[in-house]
Amino acid sequence: MDSGLMWSELEALPHVPKNFIWPKEYLVDAQDELQAPVVDLEGFLKGDYEATQCAVKLINGACLNYGFFQVINHGVDPCLIREACDQMDTFFKLPVQRKLSVHKKPGSMWGYSGAHADRFSSKLPWKETFSFPYHDNTLEPVVTNYFKSTLGEDFEQAGVTFEKYCRAMKQLGVKLTELLAISLGVNGLHYKELFEEGWSIMRCNYYPRCQEPNLALGTGPHCDPTSITILYQDQVGGLHVFADNEWKMVRPRLDAFVVNIGDTFMALSNGRYKSCLHRAVVNKYKERRSLAFFLCPKEDKVVRAPENIVLVDGTKQYPDFTWSELLQFTQKYYRADQATLPNFTKWLLSSKTPNFTLTNK
Image 1 (cartoon, helix red, strand yellow):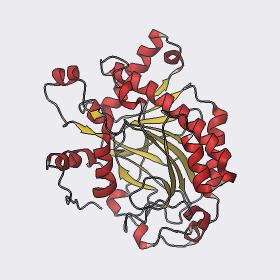
Image 2: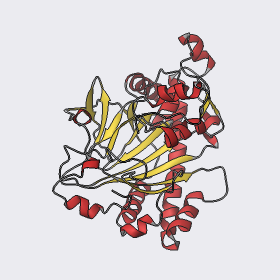
Image 3: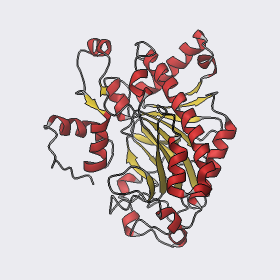
């Protein structure tokens, strides 16, 4: 199956093609709902001490256990969210050849991908993605320029919308690092410098209808290698988290973002906060869409846990590394799963051997 997957044809097939079928152990259904806290950010954003402490307590409890929570009253304009969703729909409804004109090039993280078939040959995810970069340490409108240069002038407005959306996500993400820092008992601004000048990743996800949803997955089980993920999911549902030794559903909320800890922040917390295994399932009757913003550190900044946390814990759980090293590992050597961080640590400590390979691809 090449990367120019004709999803209109795949949706109509009575059977899932072999390279989209996942082993049975990956497909155990979720029966219960994840009782992740819904954190009201309104008081925190207004500087209210009591409300901040309440938010911190909820976030600490969630992150110690499974690293997922939802946030409401987050300050992001609902109209902007709807407009971003509309622009995402416009892109995914384009003819396949137009989407392929911005196909993700080998070695690049940016562009369109159909089931990541350019990287993998089996256990393909039943989805299309469109990824692009964002950073706010320049006067140039990075996202707007990306849309115009890759898709043309008729997508300038889409670029403007996503520029605003990414800016809002970055601001929210930095605020969340403040809450996470406080919840870990360190200064609220401790992590701020790490993320201020970093390039973040914006990804639009489209999960087509699937005739045999019990055989395929929209996204396979994995932990995010990034720091913090801020996800807006539509009302179809399909996000599952592995908690308490079973898969659990994350109920969508129109007014909320799902936030989860990634491997990089797990290292920044010295392993206290969990980067939890999660997946996306597919639906026989409805397509599903989501917007995922991955907050990343500046590539050359050193990722290390605060000294006072290490002193209290008594052991430093992870070696120092840069985000660029972890990014290289996941793009060139390893398909992200539940063991990305420990395997990255082994790779890093093995003198960063250029020809190092692992078998999970």
